[in-house]
Image (cartoon, rainbow, N blue to C red):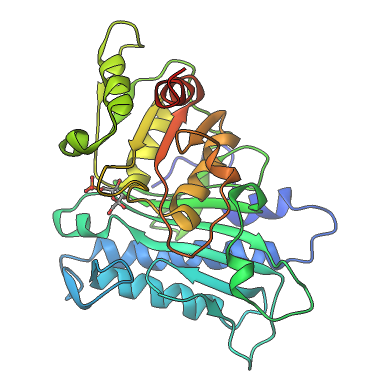
Length: 331
Ligand code: P6P
């Protein structure tokens, strides 16, 4: 049971207490919907080994990756929770080839929800943390029903973004531009309670995170940067790589550090998707005093030209990310 000696602030109370005076409730309602999806997915994941929910579905996603059964469950759940509420005009999911307009029979709203319903889901079978990532935009044209243009917006236009980490506990972490705030699910109550208010990268970083197996595929400048990370010229860091972006990002946010998924010779844009992975976490990083770059510019300034395009990602403590930019740009 949670310790109720301190302040008990549910995510619902926190959202209400911080919504602008002229709020019409749609943003608040959308955050409630996301929190509900997180609770249902958390319960399912925590029972994954007990039900026929482990392993591969019989389908692949737009990237040709085997969809895990939990991917399909989480993707379908978020759609069914959000398609009829009148809060959204469009959605886009890692698991869906095309953008998802709100069905004509439902009223359209002003918001757009882009999400990866379960990032790192192949880790579920081995009981490793996985995450949901989301970002909320406003429609680009209030007069029209949802269009692809509503989804192809840069991270700097995000209204709010966040993630749910399904780990040793389930946490929902989000920002709407005034700090980054974390809520831990009390499974006995079914409530997300404020546990990490105003999260910020510590000044002294502790970790670097990257998959060393691909180093031979990196540009020389990236390999030189990693050499620097290992040298006594850089802060003393330890290597930690979970293979689940949200888990690695969350640990580095709490303890300080840097996560790298650079481009490779055979895959110059890397593996992580701009719209619903790199962008939302770049928004959180900058609201927590950090920075996210593609090696040349802030990821928040990148305008997606397609739903599933990838970008190299260097995210974490600003000084470490800016040093990587210096190496990459040959400065
Ligand atoms: P690799 C999971 O598939 C993911 O998108 C991120 O969560 C994770 O950081 C990365 O890919 C792991 O990729 O190539 O190191 O297995």
